[in-house]
Length: 223
Image (cartoon, rainbow, N blue to C red):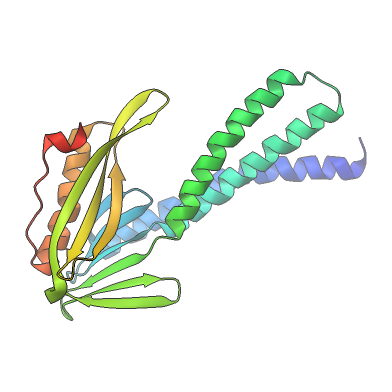
């Protein structure tokens, strides 16, 4: 092995070891800032519903958390790919490493796709003073007066992962013209009670700021 290969190996291993520390530190600092600046915070899938101390409610992607997680997972996937290529070049066992890496890469790719999609989700800003909802996605922006909102709705379903089902729910805002806007989704690995509680909290914050009625969540929605 040449000196250049040694530098590459050392750099790659060091990067994989450092990235989790940077990610954890970043998430910790963001959490501390959120606790100081916000009155309420509810976790959603790839996003947060936040109530500021002045009454504004925001639903937006956990940009930095998702970004750190995305970078870390891509680094891990690249590192595993490099190790796999190294094993192949040395003529080591092929079948088992290929199958294992293939399954691992598929799982990682699905997680990376989910995180990337979460980063692309629009942000929703409910302003009680201006009585408007501002939707921002990239450089585009749209404003909807509270008077054009009809009601909130919740739809539930079951997702299956590794043979186990867990409940999910989507919260939608329906306008008077019939248009439906998806505010976000929630899921829970600990059961329906946690999911219902967080769904209710998000809907309560939106209902309080907009004046809309709370939707009714039935157990049958999650069957």
